[in-house]
Image (tube, rainbow, N blue to C red; front, side):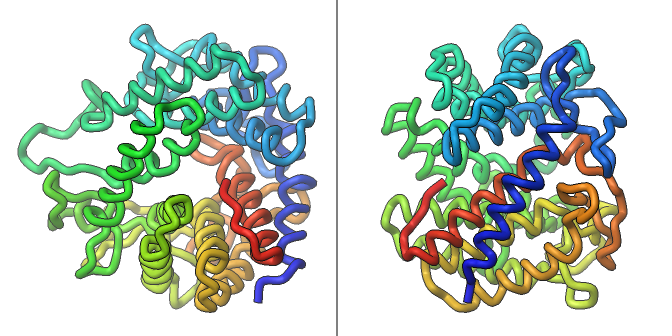
Length: 394
């Protein structure tokens, strides 16, 4: 049974450990934006600024301001990143760069559409806090740009040779299933419902392969299995994150069958992805059991485990299925005995297969102020809802 002890643990860690770490160490008060490359103690070891991490941090502090408490320091933190992004973040066509130097000069072209996705999320949440139309206009413009680019998101930066082995990726419909709700207050209801319908179909009927019982990262344009490195790839963390998105959408539509389907897929992913030898969830797997091409396939990553915890908490909240609470407790024990840094705060991001710290950094090119605070918030509020027998959306 999920207890009030868990609820308090997630709340306390979010508000008095993780967020203070980023408040103290990440602001760049000289040039704006945030430092995300932070060592174990919070010292800055690289000053490059990665757009999706800048955007994610704007989102995190805007979310806290909107949904926890209207603390001026949280809004100020969100605006520190937003002003930097508004000034330097996009090219002349309105696409968001991937990386800038500390002063805001472009380093990496806008090849990655997920910079745009997190920019839309960030400015939509920030608008809820500020009421500034510039923020809402930027969010809506970026969202429409994403929809226009989604079929060929990398555009001129796509290195695949056209036509030989066309593939489409899971990441795009997965993120749209959540992103559209982040902008729901800014978009026409018809566009919201159309986007949700298409995303749910893609996630649950195309990338989910019933005969495998798993979600593939890449399929053919027709939705078929492709026997190649990319086609055999399974990312348990992506699947688990997507399933809590889908459970929330099922609750929104009062569709219990969708909720149960997503919950059962999440349980299957956990059974498949759990490392039977050392514990924890593997990062990448090959659906045929072949060696994955990703050399980091057996690492244990922070975001995979926090997303799994959210999925199981929501699965239990929505269904009461004891398998979800059992898995939550199993995941909770592994996560909290391996990832948090008891001495310096925040979480380690990268463990080796045995669960030993592989990189002691707290932030870098890929890890920033997002998955841990969002996951802690979601678990806190979901566990509180379980205790109070009320459904919470976030």
